[in-house]
Length: 524
Image (tube, rainbow, N blue to C red):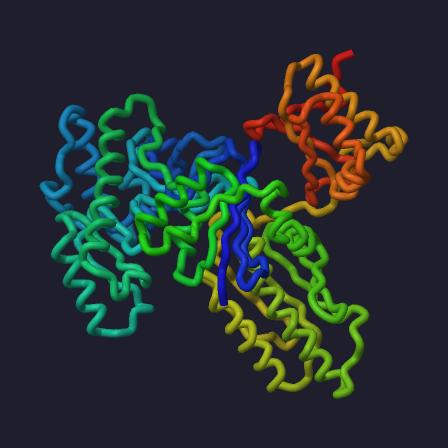
C-alpha cells in the first residue's frame, strides 16, 4: 500500500488530503485565520471553581472558558506550581528545571477546592478543541510531542511504546534516553523510534527541550493573562508528524511557503526522504488534477454509496453518530438472503472504517447493519470491522453485534467531526431560483474583465470557472479566450475548477489572492 499527501493552500483555508492506493482516506481543512489549538500551552488564570464537578473553568482567551478537571491537574501539579512561582518571581534569569526540588504527588482523591484558588495562575495545555457549545478541555500535564519522543516536564520516568515488542530493543532505547535526557523531564519513546540511532534521538531531544525553555521564557515575559507560551506546529506539519511513514511516495504542496516549511520538516526527521516533497505548479487546481475533488464530493453528505448499489446513511446528533446500512437496488446473491446480507455488511464495514477516519467522527457511533441469523456471519463481520480499524490512529473500542443487530463503536474525539457540505447553493441566484439568461453569462464575464483591466488596472489575473464553461470559452481556433487576450492583453488566464457550480466564477490576482467581482460591488 502506498500513501500520498496533497496540500491545497487557498486564501481562505488550507485543505490536506491523504490517499492510500489513490483512495481518499483522510481529509482535513481549516480557515487560514483559525489555528489548530490542540497542543497549545497557555499561562492562564482560574476563573471559577466548580466543587460539584471537582473541576474549574480557566480563561484561555476563547469565547467560552476552558474546562479543567481535578484529575487532569496531574501527579506533578505541586512541583509545577512551585517552579512556576520561582520563574515568575525572577523575570530576568530563567531558573533551571533541574534545580527544582520535587514536591509530593497530588492526591488522587483530593478536591479542587483545597488545591486551587480563584485567580490562581496555572500552566495548561489544550487536549480537546471546543466542540459545539463546550469550551476547550485542558490538562496541566504538559507534553511536547516530536517524531520519536514525547517530552514531559516535572517528572523523571522513561516509558517505551508497548508496540515495540523486542525486550532487547526496549532496554536499548530506555538506556539511551536515560543517558541523554535532562534532569526533571519524563520521556515517552514512540513506536517509530525503534532501531533509531543515538544521534537522531539526541537531536530531537534538544529540539523539544528548546521548545520548553522558549515557553518558559515567554512565561517570564508575560504581563496580561492569558498568554500563549507554546504553539502547536502548523496543521500541515502536525499531520505529517503523526502520519509520516516510509511508504509515502509523494507529498504535493501547491504553495511555495508551505512547501518550504514541509520540506524543512521532512529533512529534519527523515533526510533521505526529503525528495518526496514536491511543489505542484500545474495549471489545474491540485485537487482536480489528482482526482481528489470528485472523491470529496462523493464521500461526504448524508448518503454514501459503496458497491453494487448498497449505501450508508450517516446522521449526526449532539450525543452520537447513527449509521444505517441499506442494500439499495443491489442484485441479490444466488446463495440466498443470508449470503447477500453478509456481503452487503462486509462492504459496509470497509466503507465505514474509511468514513470514520475521513470525517474524523468521534464519541459514540451506533451502526444498524442488515440482520443476519447465522452467528458465524455476525462474528465474521465483527472481525472484519476490527481488522479495518487497525489503520485508525485514534483510540477506539468496538463491541460485537447486539441481539438487535446493532454495533457500538467508541472513538476518540479531540475536535469536531469533519462535515463537508456537498449540496451546493446556486452562487448565481443565491438560492432565489431565478438567474439572468445563461446565454449572456460570457458577456457578463467579459464586462468583469473589462472592468479589471481598464478601470482597476489589473493586467494579469486568473479566471476560474466550471469545466463546462471553460471548455466553451476555449473552443475553436478563435476562441473567446483568444479574443479576450487580444482585446485585453495576454494576462488573461482561464482555469477550470471542479469544485465550482455551473455558473460560478472567481477572479484571482497574480499572487493568488481573490479579487471580489460580485454583482453587488460592480462599478457603474
